[in-house]
Length: 332
Ligand SMILES: Nc1ncnc2c1ncn2[C@@H]1O[C@H](COP(=O)(O)OP(=O)(O)OP(=O)(O)O)[C@@H](O)[C@H]1O
Image (cartoon, rainbow, N blue to C red; front, side):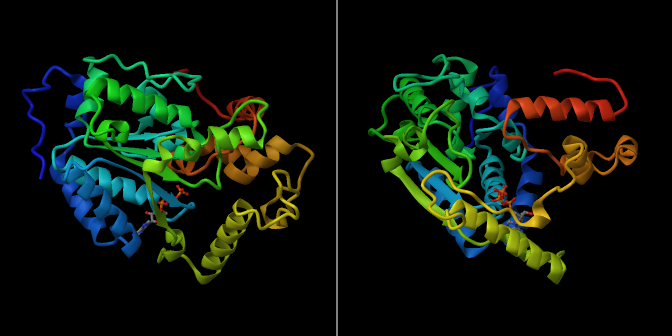
């Protein structure tokens, strides 16, 4: 088993100190509690990734699983397994909202200094010898959630920068670091303004030179359906919904799906009151404006979000929601 990082080596690197400051006993207790709950397929992935870390073999894995198959559950277990051993696990996600679900999560852009518009030759803004570069150099595992939505150039920029910082380790990708990418290619691919299907596919992670090094590991069981807290009616609804989402993603719904398709959305998913659409969406998600104003329960807000296809809609809906709430507004 690798030795924990010596405190003396990095006592002046705040970023490393932060990553080593987890309560290891608590992490081990949480880890052990969830370890026994893993399904066989989760356990297989856990073992494979952990042995790549422990044996210092390097390796790039892609955990391919649709929503609810337990990817976040696995990221939590893996990061706890690394951290309670006194090593560094960097948890990143392609979007800010996904990074909030990961313990100690950050966006990949902020953690690695990925440029805003990377291309075939870009590198990250990491400076060799800096605290940020040394943190990444010392990490034992990188977990990168929602990977398919980022351009392949983001991963390639990190690959080039790691080779620069760590050196070329047997021509291994990411300079021999163990990297676990996760997500579902049925969901959002890189967004490129005005691009057609071919351009988007070409920009995707699996069109990268890195992809030939990636070992794809699959999660196939919807763990949300296994929850003991569901009534038979709720389990049936959830099953039907997740099957419908999968069928949309697999292109089984809408005829002649060659990039554009018309999809019938079942009526129970629609908000039919179109007089004041934004108010109707707000009401469907957060309830009426009086109970919204009175609600001070953080968990209620944590469990809800309104997703929009364009920034213009985001601004309109945000303004509407802010107008409905009491209190002061703080910008961060
Ligand atoms: N082995 C398990 N035992 C018990 N509960 C589990 C297990 N795996 C996952 N879960 C639970 O199932 C639910 C879905 O898992 P999780 O959120 O990790 O899936 P996901 O693949 O990350 O989903 P999404 O992509 O939608 O975020 C969570 O409540 C999680 O705690």
